[in-house]
Length: 403
Image (cartoon, rainbow, N blue to C red; front, side):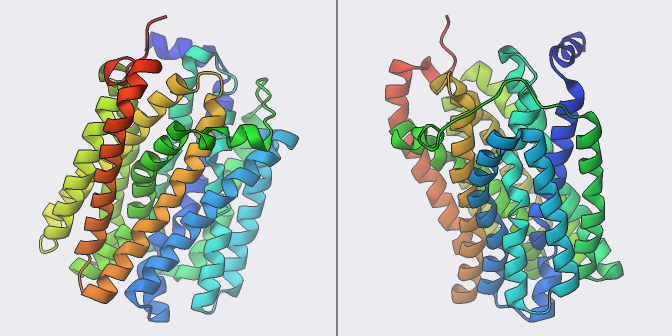
């Protein structure tokens, strides 16, 4: 406890809290269509493939919008960029409340919700900017725990949709976005670690094999997290015939597990090495996904397997970002931002794979199997790449080298 107080005193705790809250609410908005997918699907009589595509649109849009928001933050500051983003989110949500009347409008709304998905890099940089290097990892972990916003969406959106209608949820979300905006205005201060990277510097890690390797692994860990969290309400509702509210509650159990274990993944990786941790994670993800596909007749077993899968995905996110500062010690923020952008694109793969599998084979199994196979491919790549990594910038297993 004393160590945590020392950590808080070493930086600006109110800014860290504001960054967490900002990311948390943005993440909730980002997955809002996924949380309400059973309602939207019923309203417009969507096919399984249409459901998967609808859920994937905000994820893909958010991944592409991360880079422009990062550039904006360099010119007007991270706090101001966050304020601009939250203002745009409120406008987008109000448009959803007043004007949606067709499936095409829902897709357009999904693009607008992608604005909320752009918050990752700004939130983590803002939250950790006041803290010294030895505490930046912990600060980024706390700010990054805002991905628990998924829990807010799946827990509150379905019952609100039942009570007031699913379009009204957009309006309610617009009102509640005022909370992180006020907190940001009152408590946050622009950090002193001013960053100005050129476009070339920002994407530099993608000119390296290691950059692509990290990004592809993040496609599994974070892409799997956001893709599954967005699709599970639809899966539980369609596969098991639970109510829309119960589907959200079951999804919440899994998403909460993934958010909570992220910090544990980083902690374990410091001790056993990020490479070893990621190896275990990728095996666990592949096995649990295949078992989820095979356990489609048991709600209790499927829920337990999803919780285990999300725990592995959350630990994988923490493990990967334990390795990033070891590989790019002088450009951690830039490399992490670009890896985050590419990795988020993976979240669009899973909902589409699930929808296509259901529509053309009559079962969701092949969607699970496809992502499991992708995870195993990333495991093979990791084990090949680690041979060079442990000879150049990391100790055996992916631990930090001693000074």
